[in-house]
Image (cartoon, rainbow, N blue to C red):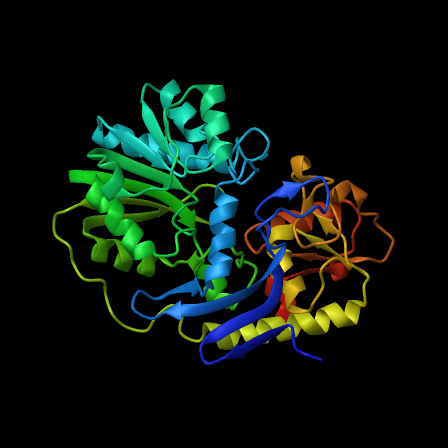
Length: 382
């Protein structure tokens, strides 16, 4: 029997993992987009971050997904994130804009235009850049200006004072070239602000819950600084978001571009740590023998795929807009935490390190015994 995952020669590969680019009401396929694809992770040694190694056909699936009229625009009225994550990033963008008072503002990957609407309510006009049918539909509904194509500084000739993006930096394959393109689109002294996932803790833990096909890059603060300095940004400030585990980054074009500090890389030893973490999960999965539910689906899916589980267990999430919906490649719908019946003896595995304690306390308040609650940080105890 072929293993579902391997670690060798500086690469972690999961043979087949659900490609969750949308949430749907059923298990119907989309032409040209595979419901499951391999996952191959490697280190970018020059800039010290983790990146996916995609084949041409896998990249084509991603490109097609980004052009669909599907719920890939994460912050929208259907996402359940407007008042939490959305509020955090929008406050960050507004503060960054107010600090420099730009004349020409663009958002790359604007999705449903939630941030553009927020900025407009605070007196700022923003043009969106997004290739998807989804974004086109929302721009027509809300009336915001949209360049309905992939970002290309040479083709667009933006001459921008301020460019921002949310949940884009981790999606761009050639992220250094993307950063150079943003720099080229800015006037001298122009500002680039973005929010992206903070993978520092996951890299330190050897955690694979951060893996998803859309997130082709996983960063630490050091890797972001290296990338932006190489792209032509002189001043780079990396902060933390107030919700979840995110970086809030502000970079200015030009000025003194200092080289990033050298030394031991943050990614050194990641694959060895990941191997131990997956092995521990494999033992837990076998030990529980089906009597387990998985909380925070998007963070549990990589571990389940590593043991070849594509629908043997129930998935749970507190986001009510996800209940009853399917992730492509996983055979069961997402259920509500209210469906967890205390006393049935079922264990719960929490796939999020960031929200582990919060979820653990809520489960215990519902009567789930502490001894039946597991998480990424407890895998070494198995």
